[in-house]
Image (cartoon, rainbow, N blue to C red; front, side, top):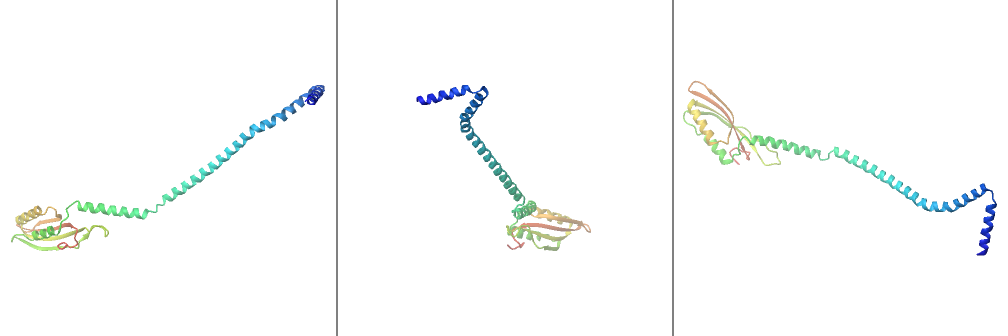
Length: 213
Protein backbone atom coordinates (compact mmCIF):
# COMPACT_ATOMS: atom_id res chain seq x y z
CA UNK A 1 0.00 0.00 0.00
CA UNK A 2 2.82 2.37 0.97
CA UNK A 3 4.68 1.54 -2.22
CA UNK A 4 1.62 2.50 -4.26
CA UNK A 5 1.35 5.78 -2.42
CA UNK A 6 5.03 6.47 -2.94
CA UNK A 7 4.69 5.65 -6.63
CA UNK A 8 1.63 7.91 -6.94
CA UNK A 9 3.53 10.68 -5.16
CA UNK A 10 6.46 10.24 -7.52
CA UNK A 11 4.14 10.47 -10.55
CA UNK A 12 2.51 13.56 -9.10
CA UNK A 13 5.85 15.29 -8.62
CA UNK A 14 6.92 14.38 -12.13
CA UNK A 15 3.56 15.65 -13.47
CA UNK A 16 3.99 18.98 -11.67
CA UNK A 17 7.52 19.32 -13.01
CA UNK A 18 6.24 19.04 -16.58
CA UNK A 19 5.54 22.18 -18.59
CA UNK A 20 1.97 23.41 -18.60
CA UNK A 21 1.26 22.37 -22.22
CA UNK A 22 2.51 18.83 -21.57
CA UNK A 23 0.41 18.54 -18.39
CA UNK A 24 -2.66 19.47 -20.43
CA UNK A 25 -1.85 16.85 -23.09
CA UNK A 26 -1.30 14.19 -20.42
CA UNK A 27 -4.62 15.07 -18.74
CA UNK A 28 -6.49 14.86 -22.06
CA UNK A 29 -4.84 11.52 -22.86
CA UNK A 30 -5.78 10.11 -19.45
CA UNK A 31 -9.40 11.39 -19.91
CA UNK A 32 -9.63 9.74 -23.31
CA UNK A 33 -8.27 6.44 -21.99
CA UNK A 34 -10.91 6.41 -19.29
CA UNK A 35 -13.85 7.88 -21.27
CA UNK A 36 -13.61 6.04 -24.60
CA UNK A 37 -14.44 2.58 -23.18
CA UNK A 38 -17.35 4.07 -21.27
CA UNK A 39 -18.62 5.90 -24.38
CA UNK A 40 -18.30 2.77 -26.48
CA UNK A 41 -20.20 0.79 -23.90
CA UNK A 42 -23.07 3.31 -23.97
CA UNK A 43 -23.17 4.17 -27.71
CA UNK A 44 -22.54 0.81 -29.40
CA UNK A 45 -25.82 -0.82 -28.32
CA UNK A 46 -27.75 2.23 -29.55
CA UNK A 47 -25.88 2.19 -32.84
CA UNK A 48 -26.53 -1.53 -33.30
CA UNK A 49 -30.22 -1.03 -32.48
CA UNK A 50 -30.42 1.77 -35.04
CA UNK A 51 -28.81 -0.39 -37.71
CA UNK A 52 -31.17 -3.27 -36.87
CA UNK A 53 -34.20 -0.96 -37.07
CA UNK A 54 -33.03 0.39 -40.42
CA UNK A 55 -32.61 -3.14 -41.73
CA UNK A 56 -36.09 -4.14 -40.52
CA UNK A 57 -37.58 -1.04 -42.14
CA UNK A 58 -35.86 -1.88 -45.42
CA UNK A 59 -37.19 -5.46 -45.23
CA UNK A 60 -40.70 -4.15 -44.54
CA UNK A 61 -40.52 -1.82 -47.54
CA UNK A 62 -39.46 -4.73 -49.75
CA UNK A 63 -42.41 -6.81 -48.48
CA UNK A 64 -44.81 -3.92 -49.13
CA UNK A 65 -43.48 -3.55 -52.68
CA UNK A 66 -43.95 -7.30 -53.27
CA UNK A 67 -47.49 -7.12 -51.88
CA UNK A 68 -48.35 -4.19 -54.16
CA UNK A 69 -47.02 -6.14 -57.13
CA UNK A 70 -49.14 -9.16 -56.18
CA UNK A 71 -52.26 -6.98 -55.86
CA UNK A 72 -51.64 -5.44 -59.28
CA UNK A 73 -51.29 -8.92 -60.81
CA UNK A 74 -54.56 -10.05 -59.20
CA UNK A 75 -56.35 -6.93 -60.43
CA UNK A 76 -55.07 -7.58 -63.93
CA UNK A 77 -56.35 -11.16 -63.78
CA UNK A 78 -59.73 -9.95 -62.56
CA UNK A 79 -60.04 -7.77 -65.67
CA UNK A 80 -60.00 -11.00 -67.68
CA UNK A 81 -63.11 -12.63 -66.22
CA UNK A 82 -62.93 -16.40 -66.55
CA UNK A 83 -66.68 -16.57 -65.96
CA UNK A 84 -67.45 -14.24 -68.87
CA UNK A 85 -68.94 -17.00 -71.12
CA UNK A 86 -71.20 -18.15 -68.28
CA UNK A 87 -72.29 -14.60 -67.52
CA UNK A 88 -73.00 -13.96 -71.20
CA UNK A 89 -75.14 -17.10 -71.34
CA UNK A 90 -77.04 -15.99 -68.24
CA UNK A 91 -77.58 -12.57 -69.80
CA UNK A 92 -78.91 -14.15 -73.01
CA UNK A 93 -81.30 -16.34 -71.04
CA UNK A 94 -82.44 -13.32 -69.03
CA UNK A 95 -83.18 -11.38 -72.21
CA UNK A 96 -85.06 -14.36 -73.61
CA UNK A 97 -87.00 -14.69 -70.37
CA UNK A 98 -87.96 -11.02 -70.52
CA UNK A 99 -89.13 -11.46 -74.11
CA UNK A 100 -91.21 -14.50 -73.15
CA UNK A 101 -92.66 -12.60 -70.19
CA UNK A 102 -93.72 -9.76 -72.46
CA UNK A 103 -95.42 -12.28 -74.70
CA UNK A 104 -97.15 -14.13 -71.89
CA UNK A 105 -98.26 -10.94 -70.14
CA UNK A 106 -100.56 -10.25 -73.08
CA UNK A 107 -102.71 -13.31 -72.55
CA UNK A 108 -103.17 -16.35 -70.32
CA UNK A 109 -102.13 -19.97 -70.67
CA UNK A 110 -104.89 -22.20 -72.01
CA UNK A 111 -105.09 -25.86 -71.10
CA UNK A 112 -106.22 -28.62 -73.44
CA UNK A 113 -109.90 -28.34 -72.53
CA UNK A 114 -109.97 -24.56 -73.01
CA UNK A 115 -108.30 -24.81 -76.41
CA UNK A 116 -110.71 -27.49 -77.57
CA UNK A 117 -113.69 -25.48 -76.33
CA UNK A 118 -112.48 -22.37 -78.16
CA UNK A 119 -112.12 -24.26 -81.44
CA UNK A 120 -115.54 -25.78 -80.97
CA UNK A 121 -117.12 -22.37 -80.28
CA UNK A 122 -115.35 -20.86 -83.30
CA UNK A 123 -117.33 -23.36 -85.39
CA UNK A 124 -120.66 -22.71 -83.66
CA UNK A 125 -121.99 -20.02 -85.99
CA UNK A 126 -125.44 -19.50 -87.47
CA UNK A 127 -126.60 -20.44 -90.96
CA UNK A 128 -126.11 -16.81 -91.99
CA UNK A 129 -122.33 -17.26 -91.64
CA UNK A 130 -119.92 -19.31 -93.76
CA UNK A 131 -116.45 -20.44 -92.69
CA UNK A 132 -114.13 -20.22 -95.70
CA UNK A 133 -110.88 -21.10 -93.93
CA UNK A 134 -109.69 -22.34 -90.56
CA UNK A 135 -106.09 -23.45 -90.14
CA UNK A 136 -103.36 -23.54 -87.55
CA UNK A 137 -99.71 -22.71 -88.24
CA UNK A 138 -96.76 -24.56 -86.74
CA UNK A 139 -96.39 -23.77 -83.02
CA UNK A 140 -93.64 -21.38 -82.02
CA UNK A 141 -91.59 -22.40 -79.00
CA UNK A 142 -91.08 -19.41 -76.73
CA UNK A 143 -88.85 -21.06 -74.14
CA UNK A 144 -85.38 -22.63 -74.36
CA UNK A 145 -84.88 -26.34 -74.67
CA UNK A 146 -83.51 -26.54 -71.13
CA UNK A 147 -86.52 -24.82 -69.55
CA UNK A 148 -90.22 -25.59 -69.31
CA UNK A 149 -92.06 -25.93 -72.64
CA UNK A 150 -94.01 -22.89 -73.72
CA UNK A 151 -95.67 -22.70 -77.13
CA UNK A 152 -97.54 -20.05 -79.06
CA UNK A 153 -100.22 -21.25 -81.47
CA UNK A 154 -101.74 -19.12 -84.22
CA UNK A 155 -105.10 -19.90 -85.78
CA UNK A 156 -106.26 -18.05 -88.87
CA UNK A 157 -109.86 -17.99 -90.05
CA UNK A 158 -111.94 -16.36 -92.77
CA UNK A 159 -115.65 -15.83 -92.24
CA UNK A 160 -118.28 -14.45 -94.62
CA UNK A 161 -121.89 -13.69 -93.91
CA UNK A 162 -124.45 -11.23 -92.77
CA UNK A 163 -122.87 -8.11 -91.29
CA UNK A 164 -124.98 -8.09 -88.13
CA UNK A 165 -124.71 -11.86 -87.59
CA UNK A 166 -120.93 -11.70 -87.84
CA UNK A 167 -120.73 -8.88 -85.29
CA UNK A 168 -122.91 -10.77 -82.82
CA UNK A 169 -120.89 -13.99 -83.32
CA UNK A 170 -117.51 -12.31 -82.74
CA UNK A 171 -118.77 -10.42 -79.70
CA UNK A 172 -120.04 -13.65 -78.19
CA UNK A 173 -116.75 -15.45 -78.96
CA UNK A 174 -114.76 -12.72 -77.23
CA UNK A 175 -116.93 -12.90 -74.14
CA UNK A 176 -116.70 -16.68 -73.94
CA UNK A 177 -112.89 -16.73 -74.33
CA UNK A 178 -111.35 -13.54 -72.93
CA UNK A 179 -107.94 -15.20 -72.62
CA UNK A 180 -107.57 -15.73 -76.35
CA UNK A 181 -105.62 -12.98 -78.05
CA UNK A 182 -107.06 -11.52 -81.23
CA UNK A 183 -103.78 -10.90 -83.00
CA UNK A 184 -105.33 -9.37 -86.10
CA UNK A 185 -108.86 -8.59 -87.25
CA UNK A 186 -109.62 -7.39 -90.77
CA UNK A 187 -113.31 -6.67 -91.39
CA UNK A 188 -114.68 -5.58 -94.76
CA UNK A 189 -118.19 -5.00 -96.03
CA UNK A 190 -118.46 -6.58 -99.47
CA UNK A 191 -122.01 -6.22 -100.80
CA UNK A 192 -124.14 -5.01 -97.94
CA UNK A 193 -125.31 -6.72 -95.83
CA UNK A 194 -122.60 -9.27 -96.73
CA UNK A 195 -119.20 -8.87 -95.09
CA UNK A 196 -115.93 -10.75 -94.72
CA UNK A 197 -113.73 -11.07 -91.64
CA UNK A 198 -110.11 -12.29 -91.61
CA UNK A 199 -108.90 -13.15 -88.12
CA UNK A 200 -105.71 -14.46 -86.52
CA UNK A 201 -105.93 -15.72 -82.95
CA UNK A 202 -103.01 -16.47 -80.66
CA UNK A 203 -103.15 -19.09 -77.92
CA UNK A 204 -100.44 -19.82 -75.37
CA UNK A 205 -99.98 -23.29 -73.91
CA UNK A 206 -97.43 -25.74 -72.59
CA UNK A 207 -98.42 -28.32 -75.23
CA UNK A 208 -96.87 -28.50 -78.65
CA UNK A 209 -100.11 -29.76 -80.22
CA UNK A 210 -102.94 -27.29 -80.19
CA UNK A 211 -105.64 -29.94 -79.59
CA UNK A 212 -103.61 -32.76 -78.08
CA UNK A 213 -101.41 -32.59 -74.99
